[in-house]
Length: 375
Image (cartoon, rainbow, N blue to C red; front, side, top):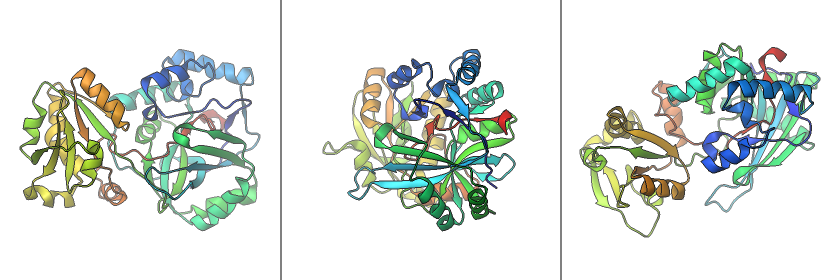
């Protein structure tokens, strides 16, 4: 069951930031120049510096603890690209879950990234970024509480990608009891934060910092997560074993073109040539077992990486195109996954490849910190 905790807050300016996947390298470097930036704790570049910085923040009053254990109401107000409706507001609870409580993942992790977060948590024992979970719970009762308390937020910041974030602590024992009762017996799925979830377990911490929202929330949106592949082999030749290959049209960006095709992905070569790859009908039956992205990794991407290739992930198509052209890489344009495919992979215990999904909006780092010793 979700539990309250005594969080640490910024006393003055909240130097919050999105997770690394939502930032360009230039934007990331600029944020690290701020001595009070939450990224120094969420994703530290120097563990000794991060440990000293955290102690300094506490001693100098940069951050202060909540006087009582609390759950934290959190809302994200945002627009969805291509939809005239909106703005949308997603509401949920920030709290702690015991690590032994079952949580269902839907994608694999990258060992190097998981190891880095594990090492940082082992030294700092501070969680600055909640893992976003989706839960089946009594959400009508939850929303009734959240809508009232969020009228007077403790923190209100306009974040990246046009998202407004609001957080307020809930200390009232009666309200905490109502919220915990609504989550009694809840079933939890990971939306975003697989590496952090695994790292907390590996670091031996007892509780996981989470942001829990409704699994049936109609605002759930998963944009495409494209792939950038550096390979000495002819990627197109490998793809031709499984896909019908055609030159792509030029009227739409490639990622939009493949969204209108059945069982298709796009491919841009190092020279800028673009193709649509449509899965041959003989393989369509396999999609009942796993989505196309899993087969693409198994047939093409993972074998080429094992032979010395290198893989990166991203969402901003224009930036990825520039990187592919300047560095001689191959770029796969991926259509977005449907939520049904994601939950099916989770329920069947057949996780998707790493970074297969990009749930939007991202949770910010630094809205509230959870230090293990403070429970």
